[in-house]
Length: 168
Image 1 (cartoon, rainbow, N blue to C red):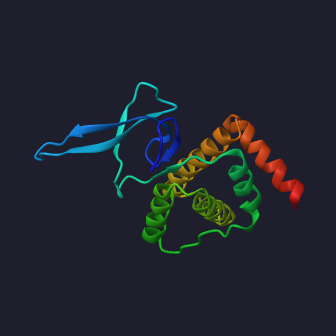
Image 2: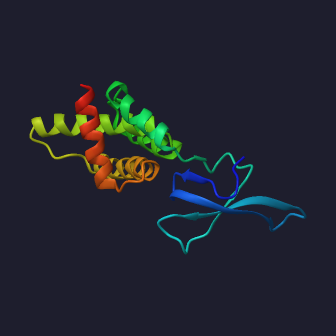
Image 3: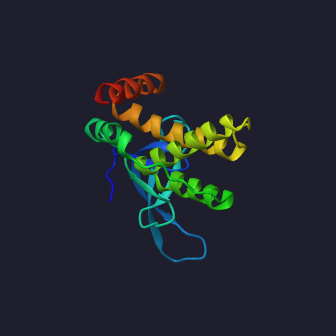
């Protein structure tokens, strides 16, 4: 369970702050249900109500700086998630994005990068599905890492490149 003031990651809305826990009346029910009242940090006027006991709405506590560094340091060892079948690959991309797990995002980003390199070598354009999910995965990953390390997204990209190159 999360506490008021916690920052969490929500697959659909990115980094959110838990502002309150509220009971709401449910239509077609006599009981009130407990919800987190969350506000996305990028959309301060938006309010989200996520049931405290929901399995469908995947949320987790946002990484701190130490956890972010651990993910960055493990990036070279994280395996690319290679799937040959187009439909299965898109399904796996969606699962990784909605998992809210940084290491899964790294795995699919590596896969998409390798696919694009392969397609370019064959004289083909990158697939629109790969492009769409690459942007989502990259945005989700870099936004959280930047938040955890108190940097902006461009700074975090450079930081990752420099840190990984130093370790190699």
